[in-house]
Image (cartoon, rainbow, N blue to C red; front, side, top):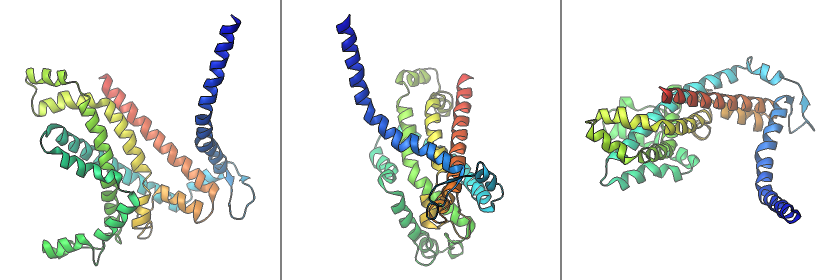
Length: 299
């Protein structure tokens, strides 16, 4: 009995030793920063001049409702997120269906779709900034010289409406590849027996797609939807590199406003509060996405 207890204790000790490095990494890079950021969000802290944070309660959160830049960044982020989420889900699913049903020569198309995944977002933004350039950009050259439609040429990155549209295009280009992988893996996980049974029952074409294939992607909708929500609400690189939030504040998003407050204005407390608000938004819409898909699955 004593030997059994000793061996069990030794196994527990070895198990703790193996788990300890992972726990330390999670604590140092996830748990501690999360709680410290929560404390900073309740404090007034300029890390250049202040020696320590000064606890101020919920003043940073109350300040947001009076901050016109925050309200504008919130509206811009939500508007962008709705468009980006909708287009990303629809386009990615459409491409995944094409790759799933086209059996011949798809390696070239799959490579073209997945290639943006390995390209750094900052590099993609630099390339697209040249494409959208007003004077020597490829897009205006194509519209004016090749298509002979100079009226369609414009300063894409210096007009409010076209600047946001340009950022949306780049964000979609960067994220569609990964989202397509998720949908394609979901399509390939559908049992072949289910598809054969649908063919035998006469469900072909659109009927097969609507009544058999799409309903069997419920789990994929949850994963792809959460990832799309995070990618849409956390957009940062595109407006930072391509427009720097301009023209004016037309492309100022919450993630960029957090960066500005933290590292340009050195107001770490206010930036932490905005970061918690953004995290709450991501959590809310992710849970909403899961709930909507679970209710659809129960019907």
